[in-house]
Image (tube, rainbow, N blue to C red; front, side):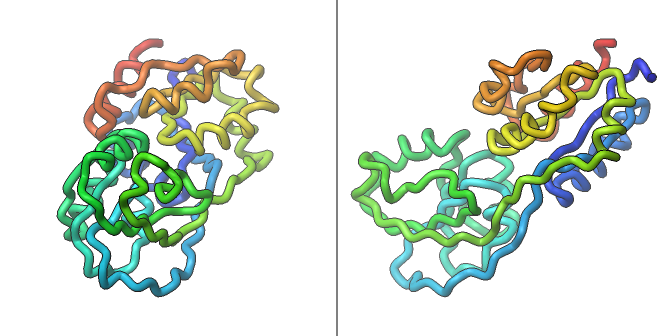
Length: 235
């Protein structure tokens, strides 16, 4: 067994590939294991009448990634990564909030507008049912579906060959999927979690034998990488 911590990437296949490209040249002394706990399936979207739509709401990076060509260019985003992706697609980002609840608070004070909410399934937040923002009108376009994955025997074996595994976890939903995969084996090795935001870390609070670190103050690439560096030095 190596004393170096192993970095385990659990996002969908494309997300794991992006993380590996970014981090493998930096963390040259650490082994990477790719063990997705979710996969993404792109859906065919229905044509909607967007002639009176004022702005788009993106609640995830993938909602930007899989959205169809839109004439509406004003965007309201959850997360800096989502906002950066929207800007990269030519959207004029008006407001960026760290969570959907924070965005709801900001929408309360706006004059009535018609929004198109681009989302995935399972649905994160149904803005059209939130009483405080019912002065707005919402349409929803579901453009992808997230499906939970179970680790193979080979993936479990690779983890059990490691002394300490460090899991960067990017969302509450993927945290729940990770917990289900860890349950059968978590007592057999040391599992450490780097949550990317506070609400992700909360999911692991009552799980025994899993060490949860503090999330980076700003969930961007530089701060996440710095947090990983600090944790990987603690050997």
